[in-house]
Image (cartoon, rainbow, N blue to C red; front, side, top):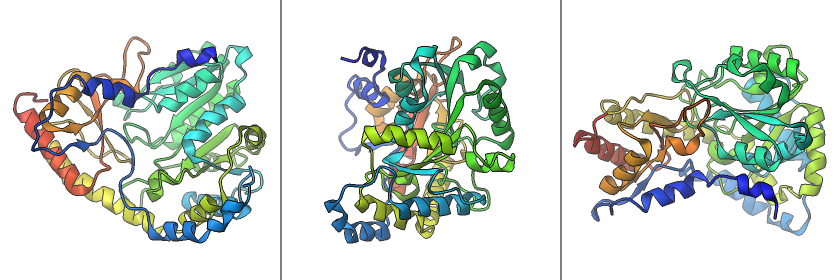
Length: 400
């Protein structure tokens, strides 16, 4: 067996399952409401379903590792429209992927040299794939803690120079998971300067980029920042995106990587052996999704309605407000996050996710401790019901 497997931590939802097994049985008259997992629950747009149904003939052929040319073109067109930048070259700067999760993991296996004492800098809290990808590639993660006073951003200058010298890969997530914070152009400028100085690659996870609340204020993307800063070759930058959240198709497993052509070339070489290729059936459905924005605008409207309905209920009892983007609330808990999530479930049937499960102790603290992530993915009425139960639970004695 691969000895590196023993370094992996239990996944947050396995920890949650064990935690809830210790809870009291929720009242029988309260239907359970799960707000712990970021799985979109809105309906898949009919145009995507129809495109997939019309493409079933594609099951009879092997898909190309590089992806369908029409899909690469559609992705390149979308990037140019969305970020108001020059169209990336679909031949050299775009590669379809089986969702961002698969691509993030595989990319780390491509760029890391495990014989060089490699470090991978990860945000903390973080999407657990970053850590697992680093460990299984033979590197060690170095965690940089999110700071509430920086809008849950990071003091990049706090990372010691000897850490940067060993860093081969940096993961960033914007809009962030779990806080929904968006990186500024100044943040990107700092990271690009550090990448130029120390030579590490930046992997930008942007799977929440299309869940925001002001149609006139779209989250800044990594390729957009690079273009604004005169880095049109996207050197040492690869961005990852997905249709899962944008188009409510988590089961489609469709996304892309885009950026530095040299890195994309090496990633394609890796994937030739890795065996990750998108079927023509998924490609047709993906093209339909990337070419249509109406369903995405409607998707944002549904999330905006849920936040507008829930926040007046939770605001008086929890220190939460609108995130910059994404569909999460990242709130303090009145006592230990694990105990609070357990007690909340036992009393109300509502499931959140302890913040400490999304982070590691680094520099003496776990930056997720004392927080809970709430995913507003359930139907609006369920979210309102859940918020009411949480507020009533807090008013009964667990006051924030």
